[in-house]
Length: 210
Length: 210
Image (cartoon, rainbow over all chains, first blue to last red; front, side, top):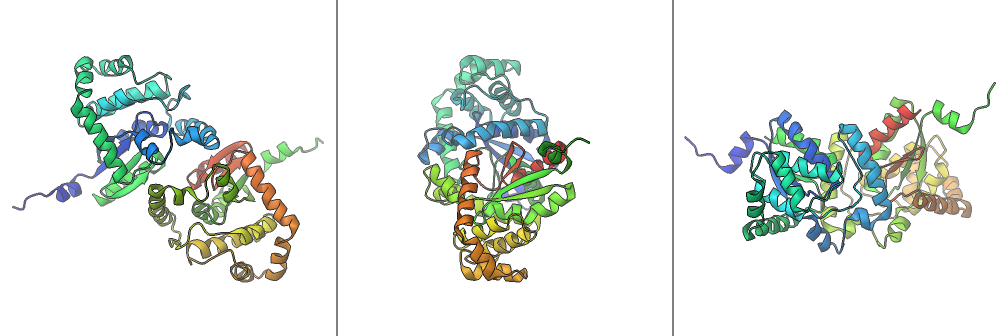
């Protein structure tokens, strides 16, 4: 009997890496869409939360390009409304953008391999882009976790440990080292796909490469 | 009998405005795809060549974002190869990017309402993104026009008139005034769609708004 190497596994179970930010509006589209689409293709999702802020800073930007480039910024909200309509997703243009998402991102780092990860990310995204609510608060994150029947206080305490903070920083550095420049980004092995617009292509590639 | 107002016409014959640049790689995809797709929907194309350079300069950029943002730049060439494969289009990564396109753009300005416009733009795009050839030369533009059986010398002389130069500058200013920040961009009435990825959505909107 031959032993299974990681590359053998990746052929058996097709996998997509989903790099995203809970403050990112185009990540909202993918968070809401990826689980159903991946399930249809029999593809496993590896959740990779990372912070966009340090990536943008490395380009010399002190905010989102949608804030810094005024013309692109106005367009993006029209595009979001149309994309949400196309995909049957609820949408409210946030009155604050981009919203800080450090605490919910730390919880996402902790929860990346937990069965509640997808549902948790959807809750936070809905607060940000449907309910127009701040998400970087104890109250918002607690609400999201409680609505899923999870021990919110314990999870939040664990998420704020030095270990989890370090993991999120490390994941962000890894994103940068892999050439990620925006969110969402998908990887199938070494093949990179940028933007919610490429989610279907990335999944098709994962299915065919599987 | 009621007289037909412009808005009545636009309801009768659905129309899409196609704003593009002959030096832009994502415009290449749309130039190659738009005629067949628009014909299928019964939509008329209004060709709107404009210069990206002055738009980028207004953002404080001295080149394409694909040159200025290194990570995005490397990604774009992989994305282009995949998109071309998906659409069955030939593709060669240009050894020079972005290529100057002033002369071919002036000819495109002159030809915007001519029956040869689509075929001419395809020829220039093929030189840039398939044959990896300079396009801002008398030879390249002459070749493209001659291959279409057109009087190249006369067209090029007309395209370099002060009137045509002025028209291209004006069209670029109009692009900026309408909030265009990249190419290709499509307008259906006042609805703006950015990027080759939105070509199908723009055409569907034109068809339904018609």
